[in-house]
Image (cartoon, rainbow, N blue to C red; front, side, top):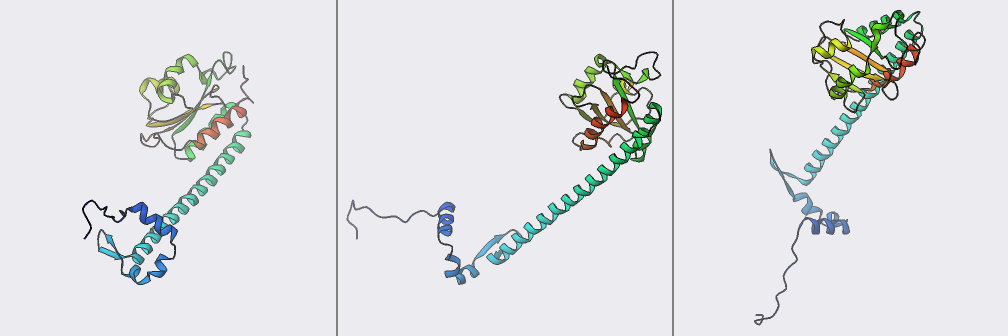
Length: 234
């Protein structure tokens, strides 16, 4: 029996960190204790407990399933990007052969409808394009001052907006349009200073915040270079 006052040695406390460190430093532990490893049981929500081997196999299956899902999403994205590229290429080729500005706008409209949309509209900021009288396309002009409140409200610091517009906003941008449920809108030009392109859908849920904007970005860069064939820049 130990004398009073004699220090009693206590066993070190085992915690997750200590056990993990031991296993890392002793990789042959499971080989030396194969029988005990086979007898180990891991808690399981539905089955009460499972063997360590079963637990590891299940974990690997889940990991493989996750990898398969990730690969599937990558393949879908690649297919979508290829389809997007082909659509843009077709549009660029079609618009480049337009015989007039009206023909250009009509071709853009047809392309939008081929995607199931109700229309496509181009508005040009009047301080960047020469579209005043006697031009036949003064209706394309859009005052930057009039547009500014809408830009702040809908686009903020960005160049794109997807969602719904109220009556006054629709009247400002596309007064001729009817039954507009939702829109995809993008500012044209590298700095968004040249104008606005608006695609419309009758479905109020078709365009929503958070959707991809790759197509809009490409169109915002493509259209100004084609429009200069008929409309001079200031």
